[in-house]
Length: 199
Length: 199
DNA sequence: GTCTATACGCCGATAGAC
DNA sequence: GTCTATCGGCGTATAGAC
Image 1 (cartoon, protein in one colour):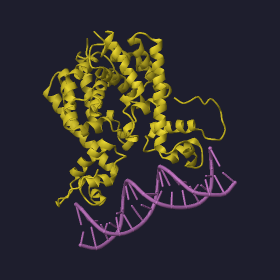
Image 2: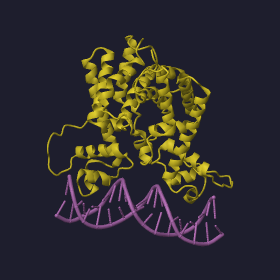
Image 3: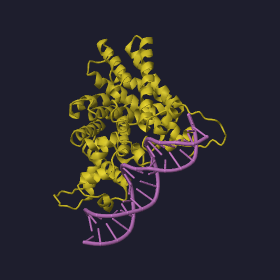
Image 4: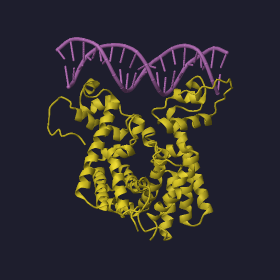
């Protein structure tokens, strides 16, 4: 369980190393099953003290982790919206992104979808009140206005569309769907889009 | 959910009282944010010792809670399948049940959907490997065989159908969708069913 | 920035009287 | 079955030397 580095390497532990190791552990075992001792081991230092150089406490790690992930997601979505004019294309690329992340950086998606942020950080905003998710809702709102998506409460549309996407990703991450996310993407996109598209 | 304990008994704390209080706390604050002290307070005894009369440890509480909920769900689904011959009707009634529970016993749905059982009980089966969920999958399999549902991997169909249902219920439970679950039911059912129905 | 050392609160859990 | 009392331990966090 402990990954020791028998090699003697100097380790200036950076903030990013701590974040990376924590993300991995949190997504594998859960926040509450991860102690600072675990993190310190994963990072390769002898005591937990080094961690406190970068973070006030354990919560702060989860907090910045969460913030970073949301920020990067937010930026990606901005980029997608800039590059695509039509709403269906925008949504399609967002789905692309999420499925690609599920294969390439599963910890990120795991953290986003499975970890219950309210339980860890009671003061944090609900996922749904964060920048990237607001942007997704705005995309959907535009889709309704432009007539690509059926007239309905945007939040409901969001719920259907991402319900299918998230649930599929969840089953992939848990291993219940055995292949890579990539294999389920186009089908899932179609189902999700059909559930809100004007017919 | 609970075994019938239909009385107004006096002081002695029953197993069901502990289960009920724990369910409430777990679904409100999360398993790890709930201490035995919290449970003992909720139950109205002075020390945690009483709890150990009924349960070996804290995990055992969550374990039997989980088992009870799954059992009762399983029984309900059996009942639904017995009363309805056609697959769409069966699914419709399952959705009925889940939405009704979300309004009448939100803790139960919260526990089922939001609580990550693997984090609490690493030895437990995935939700998807439990009796009630297997039965739901079997319903879907039948639907495919009988031609009501499109030909596809049953697990994928499950993912789409319940992705929409679960996500909608999640948003209701979190308060992001402001009204009672009841208000979103028929629309959600239609979207979920359309996502897998033969067209 | 990393170490040694240490503090200490909280929680889960047990023993034994009533 | 509930109480009093208590224990061990883990996990978080700090102080201060290097």
